[in-house]
Length: 561
Image (cartoon, rainbow, N blue to C red; front, side):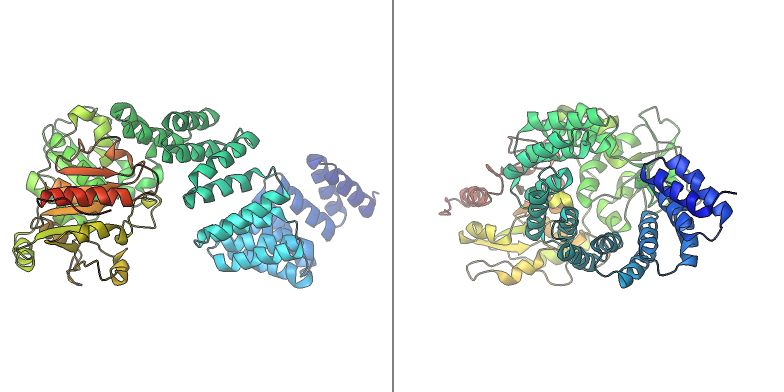
């Protein structure tokens, strides 16, 4: 009869040699001889982890721990499987058991920290990675992961130090090099990021995300041909890499290639986009076919800017079918005033709401084959409330030139990077006599009003300004009585321009695609005038130009410098 110990040594040897199938049979043979053999149970659990059978691994390691609950290695390995299954709290508890018996195990501290990071316990994760680094000074992966955690809490400069340390320990550490490049771009050191991205792609030519991120950096720098080539390389490496196809589309749109750009831009759509309204899944997507006698629901959970820009297409749908509904956040319904043009407004789909087809709002330009010459210029649906018009008109002075300003978008959105303007940059405008400035800022950025020098005066409308649930109603009413709106690239720019108010927009060096390039006007908004950075991050020349333009309107040039 075979000896269980001899069989175990044979199984361990096969496992060590990487012969997983033979090792599995050998471990099972050991357990057939001795069902309580802990090392065989543990080895089998590790083997299942290695071949990707994570649930079997977790079950096997849990069984092994019944026979040796304090085993350091088994608790650690069980934690790894639990982390892989997304059971992060259980994983941390298992790593804790392992560390309690072996507190000097750097790998256990590292893996515990990764589980903490995945469960949004970021500060604890940073400390855990630090402990792993103290225990093993050359732990390059721990430096890299701590860098990722530091990025999550906004400590980009500290993260950069960690990525640099990881690369010093391992000069060909592709992930750390890519993360370092991403951090440089976040810190507006994009010129430095490009060679880092190129090194990452050289080390990992099969990594589409590295090519994609390189494309974004090149686009930020205005190197559009190179950016397009980088997106195309990412798509070559992974043909259905939707992120790069969408990015290529936004670049094409920025360059004015609208039909080609909107086609690629369709790759932004994902099944998970329907998660807010699951009932949409049962409705077929509209692909541009005839709508006579059919009903269509157009949906958007996007920003106010998107809604203002693209709701102009809904009258085109009304021209071919009488049953059109817009599914959008309720706070935007009143200002959009869809009912005024015959479109129903919905904030959710009830069981009785039946539609033949559905369409995402920003797909309409693609389906209507829009180019620069066929952009619908007229926006008829926006409707400020009459009582609010009178209220705010009475609050504004009549003997001055009144300018509304907005400077800050939502900083939590990646798209806001570089778009928002420090309020202090408006100072040249405020040196012009006879002008009063009124804040149209809401929420993010209003704290800057408390930090202004005496030479800058910006008046606010108080807590009642857009204080109820209907977004932008006060903003729209106030705009109708202002002489001019000067704003960064935010929803305020779209709303003011769509209302036909004189609107000046300050744009970063390479703006969002909808503002195109090298022009002071916009095919989307006849009332807008665009002022552009001539170099990345340089706002002072933009606001000097705006101040001079404002001075010309008032009959004399500004002395802004």
